[in-house]
Image 1 (tube, protein in one colour):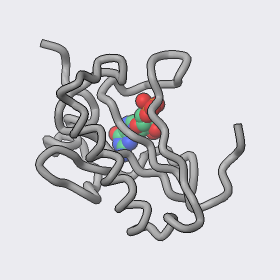
Image 2: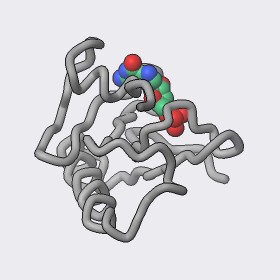
Image 3: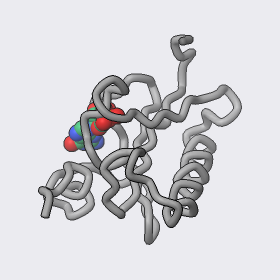
Length: 113
Ligand code: 5GP
């Protein structure tokens, strides 16, 4: 059995972090080291290490994560100004926590790439 991810520890209240959204499958927190004025993480309760491990059976879950991101963008009033959704994967993608999460970034003009 692999060790708990930092996000699982947050969900289990072993590490302090305000949970700003939660349902039966998904939760969301503010990123501890924000890369933009608004930087939220949308995280499935199910442990999936990287996007490479997403299966057909996870289609609804991944879709629900995007819908949660959309609602949070509205709640944080960045839906009209604009925002970015990012999944970092493995080393070249800059992934540091191996429990998939969707970054929601906005609240300012983001660097173009
Ligand atoms: P990744 O680099 O894997 O795409 O993103 C992981 C994100 O989790 C990073 O942006 C990092 O700042 C954030 N993070 C890591 N540890 C914690 C923590 O304990 N609490 C919160 N709120 N965010 C964390």
